[in-house]
Image (tube, rainbow over all chains, first blue to last red; front, side):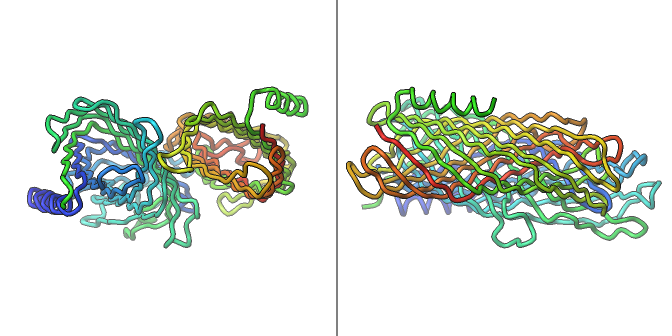
Length: 282
Length: 262
């Protein structure tokens, strides 16, 4: 299934590249890690969760027009999640009622995201730097399963059986960035970008809906005009707001917590990238 | 002390080799703070204070050569006590809070190839001081509290404008987005899950008349400072919350500006 999807994606991008003469790059972070933390206003108790780091391969598919002094466009799609081989990790919620101690809930959680960026690149005068302006739509996906929830005020934790849940947060925003490429056949490339978000379709959430900060740096080798290979490191910090305050019904309990008001998602990993450079069609 | 510092900064700005400096004044700047989150307080969630304060900004720019320029700008408000309100477990928390905000942005600027627009990249810092008194949380709280938030980060953005060679109308604007790599607060507690980072933005647009040397303009400025810290401290007597882990401050309003170009 995954191999088929990869073949379809590569075929699609190759066709796209041949039409417009740009660069197509496919990036894989095979051993990336997601660290997610949430904080919630679940009256009468506030909750902060504890979540183990999750193995999360990341896939980035990027298409850019041929570089031009007047500027050029690029589109990129970032995805990690269960579909791409991401693992579930243990999530636990302490019981924060005064003097209670122990756990209120535990379950397994996978945090994924599918983020789309449309970026305008413009070279900076007299140098190897490129300025970026992007607009983006981002979606964070939370999959939970195997809930255990505290019964009453003193326990024990009871299994919710086959109950599971998927919920999402999406946001829309814009960002600025700067990147540089130094060298030719052997090159060093770096990039930093900050994206600011609002949530256009979520009237109940704070209008200031967070930030995605991205940093990446790597070494590349371009053995021929048509292809380049690159390895490096990638970091993404994402803070976003949500309505929170939602629970699933679990009989005999106050319910299983499934959403938070504030979430912080940090992604780290080493990447490999293949850049395919296409000739423009006459 | 503060007045001396302002005079010192004005002196430094005037004495420094500059191509342009500008003094902005927001007679009625809006400062809106919202802190939220849970730590030590069982259900401490949010505190809000929204004073209207005079806000001032001092901006200095130097063109190093045709392709490089540097700029520094500092902004601060004149803090006054205003009513603060919060929620916790259905009990309202009231108090009087003074919020002083200071920000500093220092950056380099280079034009885009074949374009009058400049790309901006640099570093920024912010400092916020909260003085809380007359707190009531289910009863009067005898203690006062002083919380500080500090953050340092980097930013990128764009700057554009129109500068007439002699007399005429001009406009100037910039939008910067920043990420804070380092944050710190005074009233810390153990535990918590949110990263100690943050983010910020700065927007300024102004338009007016230039005589060649002097510029008089009106505009609009807005800054956001989001700081994540291990806050959540509660006072021992009533349990009133006096620091929070997630802190958002907006500073904005219309301004008038007086500038000088060399």
